[in-house]
Length: 364
Image 1 (cartoon, rainbow, N blue to C red):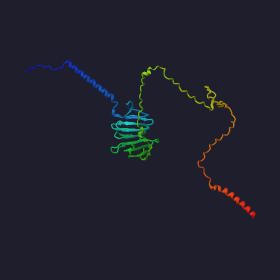
Image 2 (tube, rainbow, N blue to C red):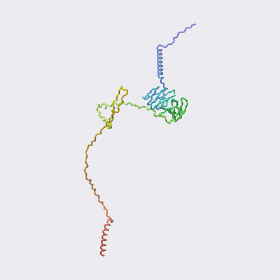
Image 3 (cartoon, rainbow, N blue to C red):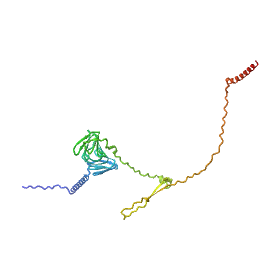
Image 4 (cartoon, rainbow, N blue to C red):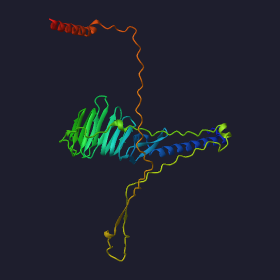
């Protein structure tokens, strides 16, 4: 009734192959442990919580942050939960997902990012939001919640800040801005190209801002420091090496100009020494009658003129007139006219006629 079956041995891998499998399994376990360690080490610095790079001359950042080096320059990267203080001047925050936030100091704010939502808690200062296709930004102040609203697919460009008196300025350049009271949930919408001023965070007493708050994004652009290029010294040529030392021309230094002596009076005040008595309850006062003012002046030296005095110079002969050369005679001298001789001839004839008439009258 019992059947006998032949025993068939099960196949077992040889011992060398079994040791190789154990070695591969150990390597895989070690590699997995290394990967888990690396992931755990980097879990405290997730990439998704990066807010953006901030640049400014006087910026202090506390809380989560990291430093990146770009083109040899360190850049401060804000992370969710960073607290920023702009002590003076301006700063610029380039968001990781696109857009910029200009800050005009002195300002104090903190940032918080959850997914695609970016929240700024503004305490003091003025910020200018310029976002085209970036995260949804919400600004919180102690009493208000401010949220820019895009018109269609247009950009969001708004300004939120406080002036010197503590009043709050809200300006909508492109798109609208929604304001909501955190205590009463009262809300209003500021249309595009509008500027309002809120006193004590109350939405009931809105007034025109009149450009009281300003933060120009052009002034907050980051300008990297000038790059200093290290130029190696020029290698000396063979001629310079062959030239012996000390064979060059010696240039004497220029003489230093002595400062001009002051000719004005010099005053010196002599004060008696101060006396301190540790045993006395009241220290003696300085006797002003013992104070002497000395005035030192410089006496001008006596003026001495050196030279000789000469008398009047001898009278000189009057200058001799230079004779003028005679003029050459004309080739054809002018002939005297008959009219010029008529008066002389007429006078002689008249006298003769008059004398004859007298003789004739006497003879008759």
